[in-house]
Each structure stands twice: as C-alpha cells, then as structure tokens.
Image (tube, rainbow over all chains, first blue to last red; front, top):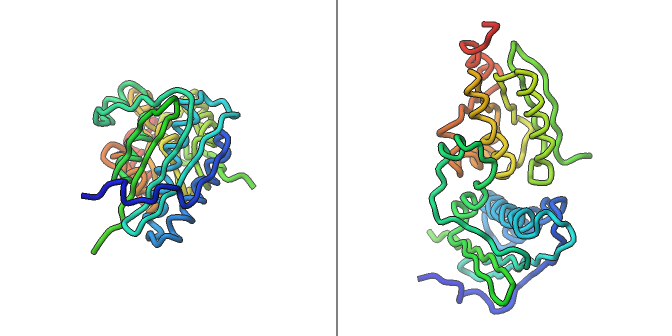
Length: 147
Length: 120
C-alpha cells in the first residue's frame, strides 16, 4: 500500500509566502512547473496546481481571516511514485466536514463556499489535515499513474 | 494587464457576462459585483460566456452557486457557454455539469433562453 513514507524526510523545494490572495497565481504557476518538471502530464499538473490553489485559499480565508501579513509555507516532496505537498500554517485549525458535498442542498442554502475541499479531494489521491503544537499541516499526495 | 477581465452586454434579452483570463479568489469580488448588478437590474436570464476564461477555482464557481436559486425563483437561469475543455473539466469535477446548463456556443445558449424570456 502506498503511503507518505515513500517521500524524502525533507522537502525537495519549499516556499514561504504571506497570506495574500494576489500570490495565488504565482503558487499555481510554481506548482504546475514543479509537477511538469517532475514528469506529470500537463493536464495532471494543472489539476494538482488547482488543488494547491484551493488549499492555500482556504488557509488565507479561513485560518487567517484574510489578514495578509501571516506566513504560510508550501513544501514539495518528490518521489518516483508521486508527489506530496504540505502546507504549513498557524491561525485557526481547519474545519473540514467529512460529509459528502450535496450541491442541491448548497444551492438551496445559497452557499458560495464549500467546493474547494471537494475539488482537492477529487483531484488528489489523499488530503489530510492535522495540527501539531499549534502548527496546522495540510498534506496532499498525488501518485503517479502506472500503466 | 489584469489577469482577469469581465465585461457584459445584453444580447436578445439575455445578459451575457464575458469572462477572460484567470478567475481565482483574488479576482472573484469583481465577478460577484457584476453578477449582482445584473440581478439587481432585474436581468434573470444570464449567460456566462467563458470563451476566453482559462482558469477558474471554487471561488468563482461558488458565486454562480450562490445566486442560481434566486435567479431560478425569478423564472430565469444562469447558463454557461463556450468553455474550454480545461475549465469545463473543473466544473465537472465538482458536479456542476449535472445541475447547470452548459452550451457549446453563445448563439445556441441564447436560443435556449428564449422560451423563458419576457421578450419571447
């Protein structure tokens, strides 16, 4: 069974940014570049970068309440089997519902949020959240497709 | 140059929103403002033309989700047309393609509004 122990103990690449939505596009392009360099197909790399966009947006909006002066670190771990991305941040811990997204119900409630985690979980093979000593960690894994 | 641009015009009684570029959480307020302006002006037949839209996140999709019920209650609809394969796939990933009307091009989409249009 695949698990995160297949990835190196230290990130191959990391970047720390401020919690500003204007930086999202840079994160998306960086992630896409790394995934493409690491031999993910372009379409797959685009989807991975979308998942990271959603995760970072959640941190900025919900954990940091749109305050633009908080740090968050994105770490990329590469292994032959796939790619692991961790987002490390402080602020409010995430409130992730395990309930399946029901679009019809969300429309009736006129909700505008709640789709980001659905996208992340659909795109990535694994999405987990944990908090260790006040530091929140969002960990996402995308395994390389094998023929 | 701005990474996201939006403009609108009336076409045969349908309010058409033309989205261009990269629509993420940073840009989404402009999209919502324009959509709300259309609804406040009593335009309930709304078409989102995404021919030049190359990226969308849940922030943009959430805006469409947040107003669709109000628009449908008023007898209208929000349809989407001319999306690239990539953007269409993003909508499909969250299940939007089962709930919203996605039409290949603007003319076909305008035609689909006609039975519901007050001018029809």
